[in-house]
Length: 192
Figure 1 (cartoon, rainbow, N blue to C red):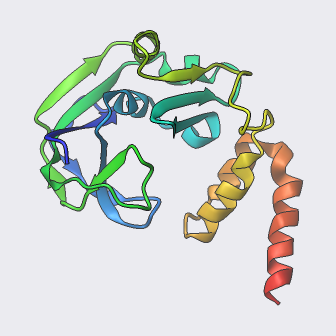
Figure 2 (cartoon, rainbow, N blue to C red; figure 1 turned 90 degrees about the vertical axis):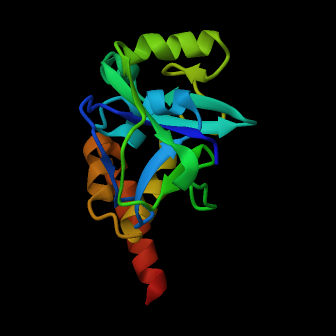
Figure 3 (cartoon, one colour; figure 1 turned 30 degrees about the horizontal axis):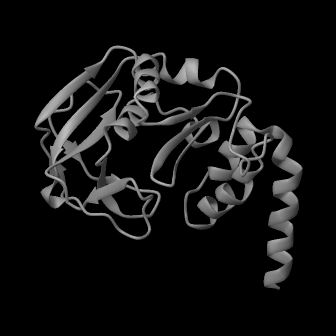
């Protein structure tokens, strides 16, 4: 693993990062080798996956604004990037390609970088060619304009034990309620 990895946060007072239960149901600390990914992760959490899509295409990090005004609300904020010793961090197949985790219970940061405005910094990173940003309604061809790609993703989250994932999806996208109900009903019927 790289000598230094990064962890983005809204909290500017972290003395020690502690392991938390991940979406993969593992107690761990997340980080990344890519400072621009930590920059994205330094934004307030909110409905994160429902508002933006962060991916890597041919090695380039892509950031997609799923709904109008999300970037301004999410990234027009102060944030913090913590530099961590990367020795205990590893990448696993079940993680996104730009993520690493450590199973340490706690890790003290080596350094803290204060970001006065995350959006301004993301725009600088875009100009430097470190990230491709799609502002609403622009997006890659594989992401539908109605964001219906989220339906299966959130059903899988719920099935993997993330209670409330479907409720969160419906709260942000009430127009999916009928489709989600139909898919869940079909799954229930096929198990009988």
